[in-house]
Length: 315
Length: 179
Image (cartoon, rainbow over all chains, first blue to last red; front, side):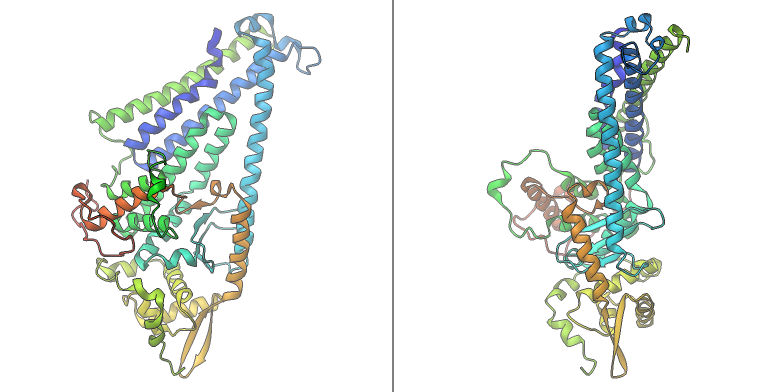
């Protein structure tokens, strides 16, 4: 057994290379689903592992409400540094659950405040166009009893021509119909459960934007137009370039230029799986194998820990 | 008044980019028919919001690119009026239309408070574009410049092109939807 019991806690480290691979070679729809599933599975496994460590490591400590028999000496021998691991697990679990409930509360509050703001408008005016000079466009996810809405400011609309506006509306509409906020929330909660999963959050944020871009390009039937809409919306209010600052910035392009570049490139394969024996196919297979292996290893560790616990105690 | 809103439209500084979208649009009639009702309403509303004051239905029709029938525009305007999203006043034999400012103004005010008061809002409200770094901006201008001047694969860009050129780039119909 040994250090293997800690495996589910560190396996999320594999998430970052997997995210990179899928982002490069899969359709953004497949990327979003795969990475979200991966984040949820790894997050749950590592939480389960923490829970078992807590039980094994601390049940025998005086003052602990759990039955002492749950932490049999034989089981504790299988877990290195059982007591330290156990007490650390208690703290980690508490932090994870506090972070999760905080994230959920914040999600509900922002959603409710946005719906409250839009309640001033006639209920069926969608997209809601707000007289605000600041350029912004948001998709407000559906709340119980309230459908999702698209909010666009006049400042944003004024800077885009009519066709680019259609691309903008199609993009935001795609966020709502494909329920992207659910993927984003799931990955966010997974990141609260295990901070090693945090890189997946930005990866999924990016892939949902790409997904919506692809949907918008499909609806308006013009990738170049969609690329221009995204690019011009991002450049609104930036009149003159600052060449003196540009050289100090990060060498890797941020999300918006990458989205525009992807839209200027050909359509990604519509199948969710590229053919094997091409570089993309092999990379996808590797990514899938990595995902499956890390998920299985997590489960295996958790099950093994659970089994020795069960075998050694009269549960 | 005299129902002459076109004079105002020509003087409207925001009308400068309305000229570019005719040439770059493929089978306009076909696409217009498939456009959803909600989207048409949004476009009419957006056109009204960009107007400097009350405008006629003909002005709206003109601003939407002319691929919608006048009666369609009137139907949409009446529907928006029934939803209280626009108000109208009689001028001679026609109506002049204005977007309902009060509710929208209130909503905009509240929305602004949400956006300013919640630093974490982007986790919940998915934004169209995120903030750009200076480096991103340079990359983006290069990309858009290359896209406007020619196909990206041999994108030899004449430097310093402005980003505000809607519909100016040549279309590549063979590349769209391939693969």
